[in-house]
Image (cartoon, rainbow, N blue to C red; front, side, top):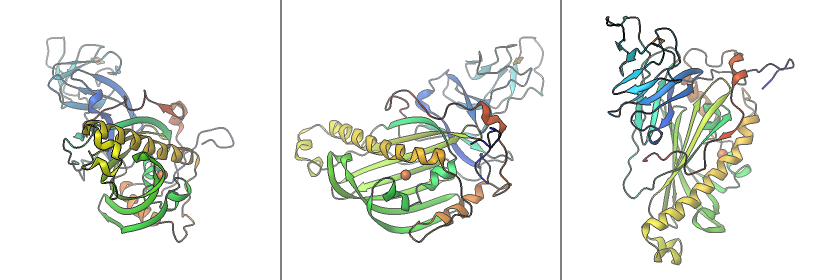
Length: 372
Ligand code: FES
Ligand SMILES: [Fe+2]
């Protein structure tokens, strides 16, 4: 957003970089020995995987004389090698060798971020004050019955608090997504950094190949901080189960990298969906249902995008009966801004160099394939 002088201004009355866990890569992008440069929380970083398989996220600039490790740096065994003077750093950030034949300087410490691998994704912990993790993201149980995900990465102008608010903004489900028959199954509950809400709605059943028919879908929304949320969806009438992931990661003060993914469970009775499906191998049924589910989910997110990218954050909002627990959600979200919750909005000059508003990564379904 620009002011009258054409300067980019910050849109939100809170930090662009809330505390929490955020996805920085999918494991499938990182073969052993791979290294890639990223922007993360307004900083330059490199994400890489050692030959033994350890995934690391490190500051991009070498502590020796400042070379960018994403431009010529290489993974050598279990170390990261700087291209400028050949210093090598272990997975703890310690400089373990130089080519000079002397002990490496103790001050040559490369910052390594705290990372976790969850359901095929690499998450990094961010705390502006540099504190250690104060919560963990749980593993989501999977089995052979669950498909590999359909997934996509986009860069959008938004904020993780805004995109996650979408899951409690029940009014927009009908206005934007054309769902009907909204029901709250359980009131939104929170426990520290975790938020859980349960709804059910009627939606067009195109995801099951029955376009034009409306089916009731039950949703369980699970949010762990502002960077990791997933929704369990069930269609009792057809015995269908699917999961939707919405994973926003701040890049700079203006943009988030938004990963979305869908995975579906093999239906136990495909004949309930369509007599035709009963004739097909289970893997085919799952592939068909998964593709249709993915298209529907991707379509829903596309409907949100234009609103997210252009909206203003209203605080306090003019809430109406029927809005859902938006106010309680915003109260809950304040915990992720320990130092500057609702402080005066900062200017973000760095956003001048931000990427173009929407960049869709390579073809859908081929972008990332974490084993969820
Ligand atoms: S700048 Fe990295 S080794 Fe000198
Ligand atoms: Fe939405």
